Amino acid sequence: MKRTSVVAWTLVCLGCGCSLAQTVVERTRRIHQEAVVVDTHADTLQRVFMGKEDITRRTEQGHLDLPRMREGGLDAEFFAIWIDSPFVGPAAVKRTLQLIDAMYRVIDHSNGELRLAVNAADIEQNAREGKLSALMGIEGGHAIDDDLATLRLYHRLGVRYMTLTWSNANNWADSSGEPAKWTGLTDFGKDVVREMNRIGMIVDVSHVSDRTFWDVVQVTTKPVIASHSSASALNDVPRNMKDDMLRAVARNGGVVGVNFYSGFLSSEFANAERAASQGGRTTLADQLRKYAGDVNRVALERYLAFSIPSSLPPPPLKILLDHIDHVAKVAGVDHVGLGSDFDGIDSAPEGIRDARDLPRITQGLFDRGYSETDIQKILGGNFLRVLRAVTGK
Image (cartoon, rainbow, N blue to C red):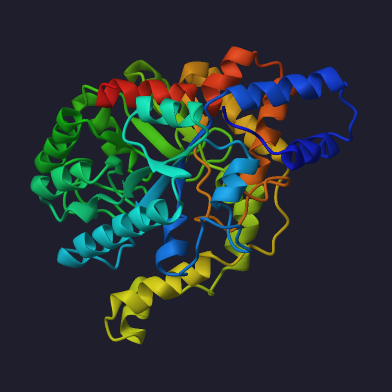
């Protein structure tokens, strides 16, 4: 049986001004405790690999470590194997294997507190035994170096989703972060989707272009996820999903994990951040020239840049709940989940400092009239259904 920290629930109560009746606080605490809470995307392995941090202990950095997972009632985390765009070809494969190794080292160092999970049954069993679950998802399809055998190898190592692109396109799929090269998926890209379906790896459509998304939903025979995306109707940025895409995910049986990044949630924050960064960002080409093509130095500089918290005031927690609400209303409550993007964002809504504050979302959903059953679906039940459908367990 998992336990949620009393500290976390005290913070929830304080955040509500202690105006809720004690019975309401107790009920929302019980809902959160009984739910299997799953977050579908965190970039915490960058802190482990590049920052040399020990996340089995409480840290002073970032959003997530094992003690804070406990305090926030977070049962299962999808740790992203994020492959930054400077890594291509064999270098991308090497980087992927280094990050997978970093995940295994965290698990080994946790003395049994954190276990690798590769299906829904693993997550549920671990939660029953009071253990935390670590899952792996590759972020950036260039990690496979255009080789289905490499994709299969990653699956054998425990990877259970792959985001087809990151902010960069690859040789077989277009990204939302760059002009189109292929008008969606190439023939090989479609083969990648089919092979992922066959071996039991979830196709993740966060970061892909709209055309790539539509190609994916035509090709796939299994449910897909958007591991960390928000609603375009509330903030029209390329990384967010339009309403017709949300409805398509619902028809497919998939799930959208709502991203916590302030710039994806709030147009006001996005505009302010864009204005503040005018002229302050260097291009990848500039960075490569600066370090004479040393991609490891470039990746370190980019990691250090995004790990600095934003100085802009965050939007209210209400706006995160609005995005969850919107996806639930457009796609249906069976097709929305949590995709925090912890440790890959420089700002989250007010009240979401890190993983400790996930109970605030439960409280917010309860305050908006969501039923206990629907809250538990959003907190993790919906994703468990997809994972079970894709892996068979």
